[in-house]
Amino acid sequence: MFHPLRVSHLFWLAAALFPASASAAKIFYSKPSLSKQSVGLVQSKVDGYWYRGSGTVAYDPKLIVSCGHVYYDSGKWATEYTFHRAWHAKGYPRRSQGVAPRGLSYFTSYVDACRTRGSESNAAFASDFTVLYGYSSFGTAAEVWDNSATAIRSWSRYKEIVGYPSEIDYTGASGACYQHSTGWFTYGAYQLRGRYHEFDDVSTGPGNSGGAIFIYQSSTDKDLFTGVLVSGARRMAGVVALDASTRSLADSSLGAKLSSRAFRNDNPVVLPDGGESFSAVSIPVSGVSGTVSKASLGLSVDAGSGELEAYLRSPGGKIRWILKKGGSLGKPSNTLDLGESFAGVPADGEWKLFLRDARGGKLATVRSTTLTLSSASR
Image: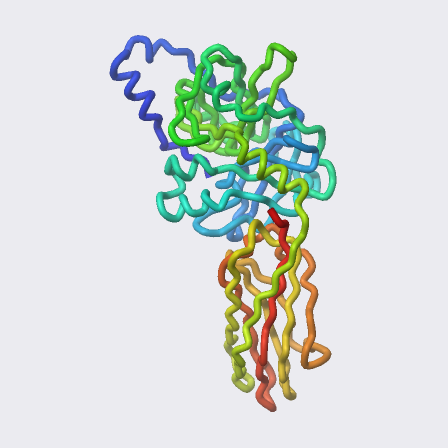
């Protein structure tokens, strides 16, 4: 999930022009230190696999700021995620020891850049920013420095990167599950594209993705949250700075109001009598901003004397069984409340309902299918 092979072009240019000064530069790298109570270990499940990353309670106690590639891989978004605030131990926490956000918001430009330019492109890194939101507080939120790019590029302000690297890129040592900090440094970052900046001679490690960069504000004597870590190498750390768009994403996540849209397929589908394979009903969904909060499925089925089995699959591959063998709709037309089964799943794309008539008898026909999705309006 981290990008350990990415190397700063600016660093190598500087090393070529000024080899003596480059080799003499002090390297700031992650070391165990429980320095920030707002930063936590994140675990996410993408396509059946568990990953780890970092996140920070920021903007508001009900929000966690992190980066997209902790929750997105090869076109699929995480279906589960857990946040463990200020975890600091050798071993992993149990999932029951953490809290589960109810959904996440992201920039669609991130997905577009991953598809067209690759997940390790500067275009992808510039939008590699997510906000997870919950029903209740995740803990005290870090204070934020909005529009932080200028401060991140400064060569006089003190900065610190905090997170949970599983391995330290600079030394190769294990990070276990301890919170780590680079300690305070004054190096200025170089802007490569939009919000995306890179520091030379600063290093963290895989697992620190989504972790926080803090800047010390002397006028208030406070450490302020200014961005998230999204890439790195042995002597480089790439971060996304905060701006008006990241603030807008956070605000819309916090004040999200649910809006519902229905998507219908009226093409009849006849199910093979006693068939062994499933027939698919396609339900294209488009124009829905953000991720799913709640879902329901309306079915009009002439089931005859058959015995139906059915499940619904999201565009990202998450599955919810609707009917298992022996199940019944109760009446020919019915709406099934799926609740939050697909919470946090991106809505846009091709949803598919799979059905089969397991017993046979009179032919079963699906007359129409209506998928209603509730999402946070932005």
